[in-house]
Length: 506
Picture 1 (cartoon, rainbow, N blue to C red):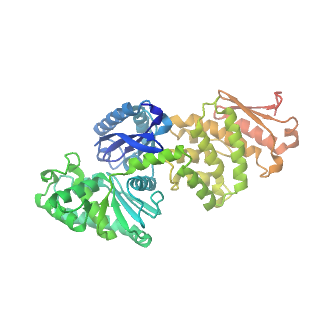
Picture 2 (picture 1 turned 90 degrees about the horizontal axis):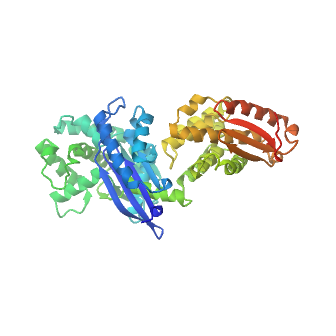
Picture 3 (picture 1 turned 180 degrees about the vertical axis):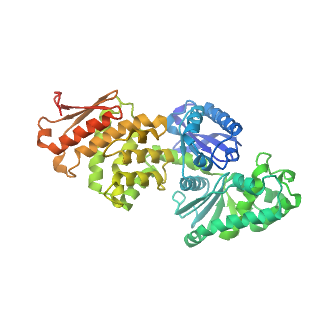
């Protein structure tokens, strides 16, 4: 089989690691392989975000197995994401170096709302378009996602809450004993946290509710086993019967239900508490079940990125409008940096991924002006790092934020060192192009535009300008002198020459 037609999605959840491989067939993705490992990485994380050795080894071993399966698939056709537990890691960079080596591809840590968006997209791929609005609930190992929308691909409201089946089981039933008092305490605690969001969801409204996680599918299967006449869904009555049975035996290890797998058994009690709390607070009378979830959403999101349906582009446009970015100036910078990028991409080993990042920062570099003119570059960096940006992973946002913070004034090399090591080289080179674009377009008008050429060789960057142009533009000359000094701080030597090839001194 031609690996160029294969796509892979890797979902590194707090309870389970999942991978699906699909073949592109007549424009449709058809799943040809699935792998699931019950790693329970969330169970190995302590309150300070440290991962114990045994869990770490189990996770790396799983990633190595996944890596063997996806070896040979083009890098741009693979996407791996880490969710709640990865978000809680005290030192994610150190773990990611080992994890990405085992898997053989980068791992994006996604925000809670981005996780919710991907879940919603996955459910939308596996079910008919709703007649009205659809509410999707996903109970993972470390978090619970609530998403509602009127379109199968575009959520209208999304929240990620920090409780899941692993976390709640550890909190309520650490010794394995399941009691009514502990169960009720869990319902009160989770219900109280849900109340902060319940009104927003009720106001948005929904016509159908769907559950997508392994926890919800397991609960639905157990209810059906207890009542074979019951269709595969979750109702308050069915959930109450399952709770009664669980409390009667007092320990999920003693539940004699064939539909409950041995792997899910240790964390199912916490999952049931979360599900009951959600259904109570949102007053859900019946919850349908979807076999599609985040990994399917991730796969289709990946295909969209490669087929000019990249949600990140829509996010960038929306942010530009929200922060009232000067569109004309953003386009000037974008045009200049794109032209420069095309001339140095091969010499600097830059790919289309880097072209996209340079395009997006060119469009958004001035969003900090919406807060204040002073230190606007720092404000821009903060927004880009911490805002909810649908489609973007956490590392992508950190990358953009780093470029934003370093776009002007002195370059602080320690800022670059905060990025994962694999991103630092490309960040340096994109930063050089961005800063030159800003210097060459400081006048913010088209009258100052001129022909130029850019070339690169290792850590040398050369900018060619028309004869006499710098003499007529002394401010730009001064700016380029400053850029020579600053780029030298990150190991890039900037030289100037005339377009005919003659050296041009500053």
